[in-house]
Image (cartoon, rainbow, N blue to C red):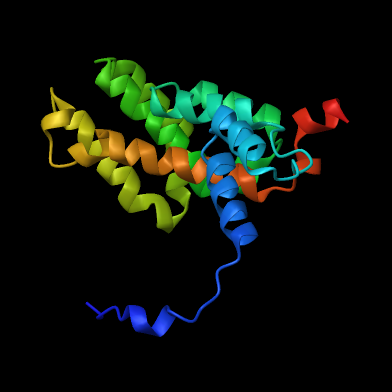
Length: 185
């Protein structure tokens, strides 16, 4: 670990406006709408154009992904940002795999197998997905998949990573390409 020497930074000027913009960016990224509005009001910042557009929908998408409804998260993502999941195969695979895990968690093993055969198997044509597919299919071998060696695929931190990646992918797309934003303009 590198030693941190505060003396190196004592002459660095920190612009208050930059700090406020960083804080606001964090609040918007994480869908803290009310806090962002209060922050803007308290700091006297000018409200950036369209900064709240799509925030409620992004938050819903994130919550659906986190709470075990990956298909609804995908549906809303397609509504907000058409073609994102078609263009981002890794993200589409991750969301489909979340649904697969949700089926296993609900003990719907037959439905999970059918889902894997129709929705996940096509990814097997690409070598980059083979190991992940094998890991997910290994979960089927256990009566209690959350006790398997692949249990990390069923944990909330794995789900959190995918939900964060989805949120980030939506944020990267310019606002004017969001279908919901187009209806507001």
